[in-house]
Structures are given as C-alpha cells and as structure tokens.
Length: 348
Image 1: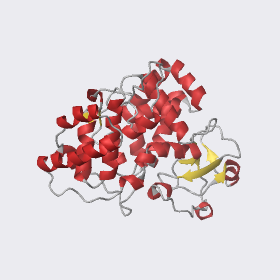
Image 2: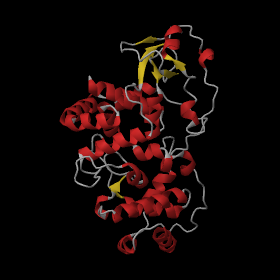
Image 3: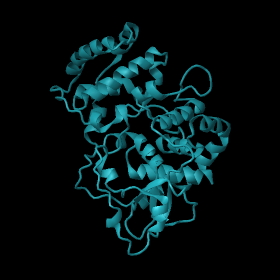
Image 4: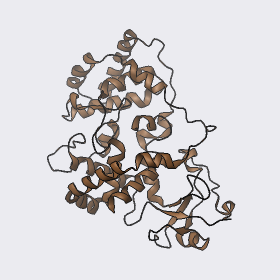
C-alpha cells in the first residue's frame, strides 16, 4: 500500500515532498545492465562525496544489479490527474478499518501499553494513533516488503525520472549501513520504504529512535523502536497534544456550503486539500447547525475544516490541525481518515 500511495498522491514532508517526487531529470537512455553499471560509477563518486565510508561503498557496489521490476512498478503508478473521478470513501473504509485490523490493533495496544504510555508522555502523540499508523503501514509488522532496498533505489535512480530523489535515498541507505545496520536488514517496498513504519532511508536517519535502550533504532524488529519512531515523526510534524484528529458529524439538510468554501489553493497535495472547507472554530460549526455523531466535541476554540468524503447526506468530518499531521505521513484523505477511525476503534 505504501509504495502505491507515495508515487501517486501520498507524499511526506522533506524527502517525501511533491517537489522532490516530481523533480524531472533526463531518463537513462539505455535501460540495460551495461548502462546501469556505468551509472554506478557516477553514483559511487556521489556517495563518497556525501561522506559514505569507502568500506561500505566497496562492500555494496559490487553486489548491485539492475532491477527492471522496480522500474516497471514505478512506471505503472497512476498519474493522479485532476480529471479522474474520486471514488467513494465507504468501500475504502470497509477494507482498511475492518474487524480483523481493529482486533489486531486492540491486541497490539494491550501488549504494548507500557511502552505506548511512556512514548505518549514524551511526545504527546496518542497511543492509539501510533498503533493505527503501524496497522495501516504494515498490518502491525505482518508485511514489510522483501525488496533489496539498495538495489531498488539504485535502479530507480538509474532510470532517471526521479534521479535526485532516489539517488539521495540510496546514499542515505548507505549511511544506514555505515551506522552498523546490515545490508541484509535493508528490505522493504519496491520504492524504498522500510520496516514497520515504512520509513524511507532519509527519514530513518532523521527521525528513527531507539525506544528500548539498546543503542540502535531497529524499526524492523523492535516494537519499542517502531512506536518511538512513529511518535517522533508525528512530534516533528507538529502534533498538538490534547487535541483530537477530528470528529464525525452530520451536516444539516439545506446547508449552504458556499459560505464555508475554501478559497485557498494548497501548493502541496492540492487535490487532497481542495476537498476541505475553510477553517472555522468548533463553536462556529456548531452555530451553523453541524451535529456530532455521538462523540464529544473538541473545545469551542479549536479550529477545524469540514470534509464530506461521500458527499452531502453521508457522514462528514470536522478535522483539526492534527489531521494535517496524519496527511504529512501520507497525503491522502482516505488514508488519514482511516488512520483516525482505526485509532478511535482501537481505543474503545
């Protein structure tokens, strides 16, 4: 799921921004092993200039061969054009916030409760949100990908359409090896995402954390490190402690949506944000007749936007700034809504 979303509409801050993903370079002319090996000489020079040790370079580069499958997978990604219709959210929700995922989430929540409580105290990120991210990314670690990350990233860099991004992630992967993580450990999605939280190498270097005190940030095998790293990511992205991600609401019949229309154009993920209303306080939304569907209201002064993923007459959501933090992890309304709803279900 991660690879599909990152190369279509769901991108992360920093190394995962749209600007980075759409940086255009000239594709390699000869998509063959000989051309790939010639490109590796250039990549080797870049890695050494970036501070990767000669020992790591000498151990990794001789093992690299072109992976044509990851190039084919990259080229097969949907373009996310503005003219394509947006499907209904309900089927996606049924698939991703299902009884099995909720059940495993509750088991994980109970099993990791001591660690989760400590991380929430340190970061302000709710326990259930961390569990829900883990559940959505890899179904609580049950599938994390088996592609050789360094081979995949070198192949994608060679292909050339996103060379700056993938070459940078490849070099970040080499720096992870320099930190003592074995080459064999660097397995993940075809697009380079690794471990339980599906971090790209540059995100790992910047935000992965040691949660169990053994001196390593092992997002592949350690639940404590996985959860600490997710919590650190959300803190870095601006999570506001004590504020919910959002609340399910009903919009009154005859509601004049033109009065709350969003008149701003987002430079990031514009198709995601164009579906949101303008910002209003919770008190203002209540004054407009919007009613919560059973959950308690956030404080009256909390700012929120309105999203109606399945259109008028269906369940809508008032979304706080913390929802935008979930979008920072994966810029998709369906993903972010499902994370929030799974978190709520896990915590019940």
